[in-house]
Image (cartoon, rainbow, N blue to C red; front, side):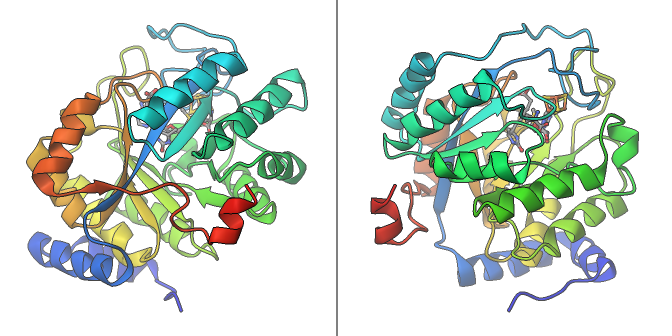
Length: 326
Ligand code: SAM
Ligand code: DTB
Ligand code: SF4
């Protein structure tokens, strides 16, 4: 049984002396996961920029003057070729991202369903992050073979309207519910480094921790401060905050894959090693996230060698029968 954590308990964990915190998180990690096994996802922006939302961290919002070039939805053949490359590179999961407020029932959605079928047919887990979805749309994605849906809550309920005004925290939770009802696995996390307080970080982890079932995957992103966005001048997140956040997530979400997500480019290998020790067991690999750079693939593989990490195989959490039916 997963414990029901209170906000105060989570705050106390977050404020534990750092080495004690890492050690406690590592113990939980050992209990529920294979040490050194890291799930590697590849990210692809299938529709870039021009988004009507006002998420103040995001370079893809149409209203901010950033260098992101708008690109309409990619063709299925192009996406298929990218999936082949990702597979060759050792990724077990491919995550498709679209700069949409929500999914609409139109030709573009049919195209995305085709992409999901095609990539799933190659033996890769497919994940998508397309904005808000209804239960029916989530079901269609599930039928096409989608493995997981990413929909971040980003910050605490209290801080949400300071970051985004074009939708509410409850809109996000509704989509997460729809995704669950469709039988998809849930990937939901957030961002640190947007000027939020420690209480906001804890509030975010609290909301994730009380979901039942808890999300299978929780990405912890360090803000990538992009010129032209309202967050352009935010100071970088101290690595110690990232380690604390990951360790706390590991303790309150014991079975979840905790993803050391955006922001790795400016982290040292030693810093990332501490994150892995503190329970991170998933990353995005590949030279690009959606629109911003990520560490070079070869450098990541060098890091894996040095730290003794190995990429997790696709569908490792599913039963054989389930895998065959895909
Ligand atoms: N439009 C869809 C949505 O918002 O759900 C999907 C794509 S959106 C880019 C996915 C997530 O990327 C956001 O929820 C946010 O957590 C993360 N993200 C976007 N810009 C970021 C940045 N500059 N730094 C860190 N994370 C970022
Ligand atoms: C998530 O939590 N982080 C990824 C993924 N889910 C879609 C996106 C990070 C985006 C960073 C900014 C960019 O490259 O545009
Ligand atoms: Fe649009 Fe998603 Fe960026 Fe918000 S985070 S502006 S919804 S692409």
